[in-house]
Length: 583
Image (cartoon, rainbow, N blue to C red; front, side, top):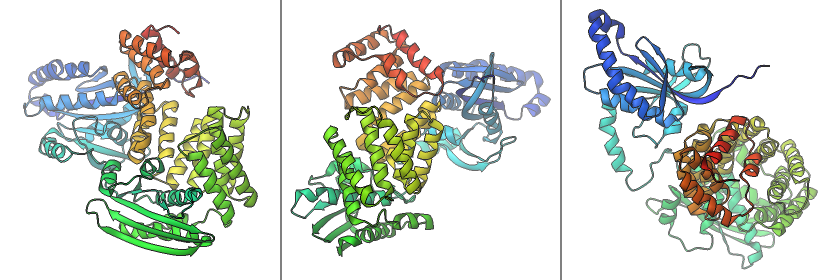
């Protein structure tokens, strides 16, 4: 089968409003006005924003851009320049999608959708697809309004469209800027919650794993509710053992409410106190104390979750209610072992010893309950870490991770953690389509699962859809700011693959600031600098890299990355070569 060469591109489609009517009224004057508009407004804007006109059809123009931000900024510049002049008025549509190059021409759905969007724009305005709006959000100087879902000619599925017009924007942009001057703009109006680690009141430091485990389980259950944004464990646990001001925590994590509490375990009895606090007013939205047998712990977690949901005035769907109420195991000893294993696996210190402890605890858990899906997923997770860190010296860690992931999937197909691990297993097998499918199912089951959100973004980078990855990665930072340094590396990678070299350098530089000894970000940053022709800067970064990791090999680094399109790895190598930094 002959291979079709495709690439991702932003397409701008423009057309003159009322062209036939204008030509009928004054043919010579209209042609003169159109020529002037192209020479003085349209073509200079395209050139400034690195676009390429590939087709002229009478009064219509199609332009290709390597950057969707450039395409939208170009459209804004054109419409702002023409605003109020009384001359030529355009409608503009912008889409991001696959295109097929044919000489100087370009075909494909990416072009077809852009051409269908253009007639939907208001005269003098812009109409973009949902993927464009998501990709440029907060990165361009305008805000698009939701235009709803529409059916486009010869497109077999509905497309959500977003619209902008300079006259409407003039009245709204400045107030929005003023309102957001002291905080990052919120892109989601759902209530958000941070669950702080419950205090261990047992008087026994060895019981710390239990209080942390219950906190984690509550976070997991809340994350299954689509109507709430839930801050991830990594970020909320950063406040462990600290005397904190609830309002400060809420501001730092962008949470509208905070849950805090304590746990006292004595033999087979457990006392749990919990209180939900409004982060704005500091008032208590809900508080409760539970004195129960240990065997009732799942019922307590279920009740806490449902009370929080009620206090936040969120309605559970039947599916969400069912997922929250399902106990992961009926064997309390197996659950206790799982909590110990998870604490070893996810704790701050990750070593060969913590890996061995996690494997031992998870193994004991599945021996006690052979149907405990999450414990099998824990084994898959532990061996995945071992595969990446080579702690055990085993050559089959990747295969063991896949093996346990497969068992976990058989035992618990509706567990988001299980689906996430299935996605990771497929990722390392370079089955990126299967990986994205499994991770998508994980997010369907747990919409606030930040690790899965970031993983889907990572998969999309290597599948050749880097601009689609950025929104996932930015959302992961929103839910898990403690891992911002890691997600910034992936955002830099996405921009590099999308040929947004300046944006890639910015992301890698910030990552290096947060993690000064990183070698991977420096390696990819050199490639981006090479593409920008900044050879001196690239050589300076290469000197840093040699000091930090003398044996670093860019070729080995790139060879490990599971790109599906060889052109993406070629782009990385080409940037390194342009940087002229040697091996």
